[in-house]
Length: 256
Image (tube, rainbow, N blue to C red):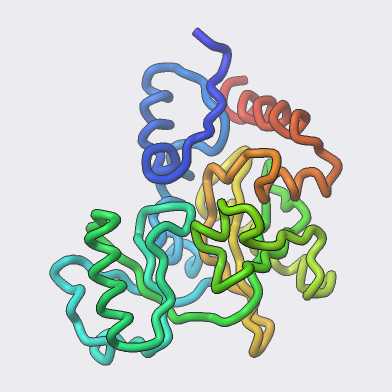
């Protein structure tokens, strides 16, 4: 048996805690956050509720099921524009920004049909600048500012060459606001009972400079060009060294 398994899976098959829990039962060592942290972070509504209880700023939101998806927005207490997203998914797959009732209805039905979701989250649309906050061993790495070529940082902009500029250090906010995001990222990581490493995603509202945490990614992208390695490099960790540190930290928190 291998000394340890380096986890490189994304989405529900690798980040929802089921595989981690299975490995725990089988005695297989693995890198990255524990099963509980993965489970809590994968569910966007649960994460949102935990953030609120822990004082981590996050947009308000509610969930819709197949039974409630046709509920009028006025009854839900929400107003356009809105963000529609799957409750359990990754890589911004199935995320929609809607400005009209027609777009809203279409996005809701697509979210259920395309993603085979049982639950969809809606939240107010916040116009602003996005930032990625990598966390390692509970401490924040330098922020990465994300400037999409078009729209927002969706699946296409994440994985297509030239889809977005990724600036580290950030260019649009000062040190004080950067540190505020980093402290909130650390708090989100802790609130979700995570360990080893993860990435918290934030937006800064352009109207009032308030910060909001959207979610925490249990297994952020780990190609040399991904956001997390870019932040680690800015902190003095080259890609190979980062992988070694992740292995060492995983062994330390769970297996020694």
